[in-house]
Length: 431
Image (cartoon, rainbow, N blue to C red; front, side):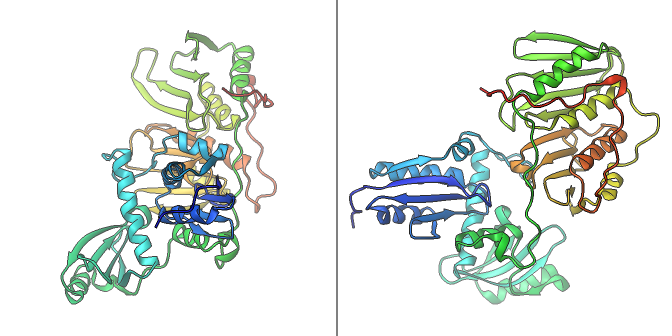
């Protein structure tokens, strides 16, 4: 049956409560025809003129582009809000994806398969009989109401869920599940993950923050450096500190070399996007020695955190600052353990400190926001970074974003040799 003549405008925007979910708003006499296209791509109605797309694989911008292209083919007018367009233009990656050998297209394909499983469960096409915790993730056994693979074992959660094995009969699938997981087996499906709860609430047209029982306090937007703030800090460093010498081999890059010849700082003046690396810091084993460790810092990182690192490198404290975990525990940050990592989150979830003990390149990560995959900014440090530097960085983060239970944060250490403090933001327009 042909669609009605296209005479509608569809505007796509990021959902205000859950990025990167997308809201479609329709105006015009043939808006109902556009709804049919949107529904085929996973959008669900939340009002007379609005629909929402919320997915557990976090690929809403990608699928929004596909539906917008289809709508344009049928003659509809589409518009992308600037913030959504930025998400579309930037190629996001999963920061801790367990399949690092997969390219983005392969990861997206695996996520789409996980989305299908999620939708089948949510819409009653796949019934879960039992679930268990295998020590690493959630596993389950279930049966499809139709199809070739009627009885299956599932492995993983959210965007990592996949079918691991198929069976001819329900009895065979359930018996094997009991054999594999023994006393860990529990009846019915596992509790919904936080992401699944949020997605289902959004698709139902309600706000997760007000409908999920005992929901945690909403997170606070993390502070970010204003455009030009890093440039001003770098200039102040050279103006005030004679122990740092400037080199600029390329117009877009400035290198600061410490008088000890063991520390090198590189600043990229072209870094603009929040995921662009603006600073690279490295420490060496002597003037001609090998590199001991390195760190990368993205463009939106608050200046006090960069200052804390350079201050430590310029004049390390005589006393050991302890382990960063102790600092964060004292600041009432919340730890969450995973077989591959431990993440400490600030009470308002505006910032987090993550340790991946088996990694080498990025063993420690400090980031703004509650989701590393879409962080407002990140500081990544390699395996051999000194623990006292990590502790000082953690302490600075805790003091910048104090816990409500710590109304009086401890004062920041005095700048060594007058190292420049965070300079006022210069609101320059970025390119």
